[in-house]
Length: 241
Image (cartoon, rainbow, N blue to C red):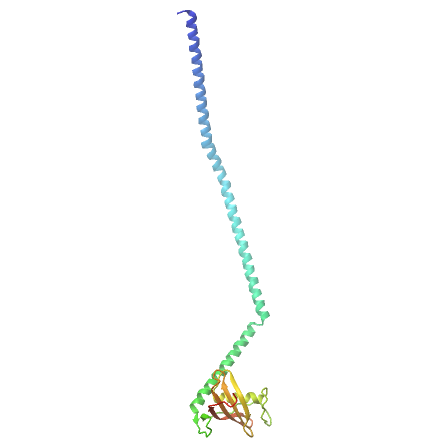
């Protein structure tokens, strides 16, 4: 082997060694770079997340406080609305005329009405207990009876003259006396109230819910006291129907 060939091989070997060394260095540097990058990614990124968390929590807490404030404001608004609605309701009631005074008045009227109704019921019971049958020669009479009725207290003063005007006080008191004798409650059909001679009248009536049941009631005027029922007749055929 010649010297030139030997030198050539040594040159190639040296060149290959240098290339291998360069590659090794590059690989080492690349590995170091990868390690650094991984460290930055793992530790540096984690630090950023930790750093960002307080800011996120702060924002969440701020939002929570804002929500509480909004909730408090809404509650106050609703409370104000309720007070306004109550005030409006009270005003509406006042405008409709259904104030507490009116309600008390209505209750008082109802109580008075109930008291009067109870009084009428008691009178009816008393009348039923004191009824006495009487005979009648009229073939149209199914039943006739009398009782210990008292005169209806009159509001009229001075000499009495029988009035057949349906708007007169005398007419109202005659109907009241008829109710007392018959015990009719609620609406009453007044077929006729006619002169019975002197200070006497005869009233023909029916309960509104029993128009086929007809009563004829004889009334007599008692001076300074009022109309007093004397006889009640239940008739078969109503001559005024």
